[in-house]
Length: 326
Picture 1 (cartoon, rainbow, N blue to C red):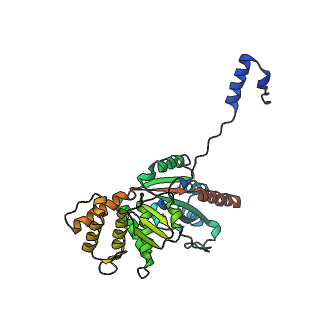
Picture 2: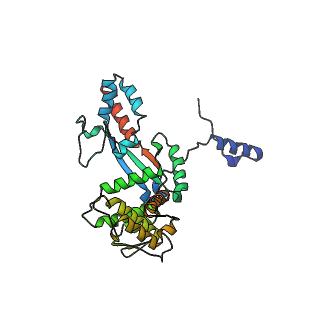
Picture 3: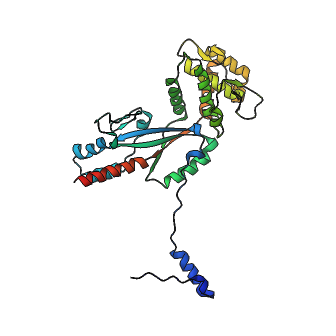
């Protein structure tokens, strides 16, 4: 059958021209706009990116050799695969998943070569009310690309999120090096006062962190000094104390080694309790309310977006090579 001839609209008159224009609009190809999947709409301090590898040789062998399934069936099942949160956090990473070290060329389980490797790239988002609108917009875009992205909401309470954060911080600290206190202070600013300009400021060398009542926002950076509000400075002292109090007696802070009672007295004099709306009767109650205030001010939810595009591409390549060998 031959193609339909094209009639120049400019050669038509009146109603014929309008009909031709309408038909042209109907027959013109329509292209779906690709969703905007740019994570730059969220503050970088709120994002943690983890790359998890998978050995496709181990994966295919499980379905074809242990379960006795055909390669095509194995391929169909593997296309649905998404690692769990515990795999990405390292809490329960198991075969066929692993964290590939630089220069690693062999699977730690089956000794297969790196041609069998594929990657999942997970972006963990610690949500905060200050950018929830942007997070929802990004989530809507990710849902439209469900083949390449798997998304979910971690079922954690605010206190659990806070406790996990403390554990991650503590694992990477060297209490013999006084630099840990500035590092913790910067992590507190990232967590409790996330903003789009923060990362750029922190790329500079911060040599000192101090409280200031002169700044309008939560923080301000100038010539190696990071000025923070008294309330945020109180949060920093609390976190420093929490992390170091089991290291030796008391807890080390910017204000020296302090017992719990000494720290609570200092925070009261700083106006921290008033700024956070805390009205305690004693030091222990003050401590509990201060922790609750930090939890409330920090991230209130955790979301994961897992990019499966590399995995799906490598999976298809491996499967097609298996078919060619038959």
